[in-house]
Length: 116
View (cartoon, rainbow, N blue to C red):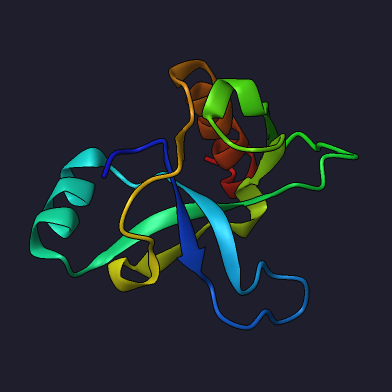
């Protein structure tokens, strides 16, 4: 498991507009943490949910084209929905990868959203 990998996550029931149920997510936590969590098979990682609704992409979101990520359709990463989830909520294998150039944009979107 590496930063930028895309997994399916069970995010549970949504409250007031949050991402819900099974969603594609991109791992954004540090690789040192991700390696430890994967090795132990326990712990938590930080993720950003994806959505296939790409009608409007705000500055705190990043458009992810299917041909660049290996996904079936274009999506957007929603930095405003960042959260930490249990490793147990993630699928066993990744389903795609966000390339480095787009991870740089996602980092900028996270900085904007979090005022960092």
